[in-house]
Length: 225
Image (cartoon, rainbow, N blue to C red):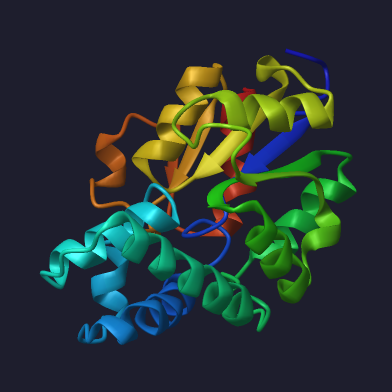
């Protein structure tokens, strides 16, 4: 550990800093409509979240009892990404306390990053629209260059961009993938219990679990001690 710890805090995005489920539902329904699928409500979409866009689409196809060949799946994904970029540009869903938390961390000289299974280009659109993009020195999202969480590659890319080691940072997320990526990279992990996981958060084995973003600073303090 360094004398100033942590040097960086790296966040998941969906379900951690942003309630993006309504936007995902809107984009997914737009993408699935040409197949005659019944619209999914937000509660149903939350059950589909996890693993990236294609994983959500495949779960939606199963739920809708629709068989789709590879070409059809690609078409759905293309429609989804266009719609999701559009709705993400509206800047909706920032969880209460998110901006205050980021401002306080930056004010203390702590670098911040984003590690998300959301497509990286869409993540940039969302962060800009939400007015928080300037807080992050590293944004790593889903792309062809790295495997998704819980593989450690994305989080390690964040650390390299921020110039920190695993011993100098904390990861904050809401899901088994977030817990997994932190453990794989050897990084302490704080999980929020208001996100999109289907497994009870307190069963995942995080170092600390919080119920509001305003509790993050105290949680970091407990890890520091």
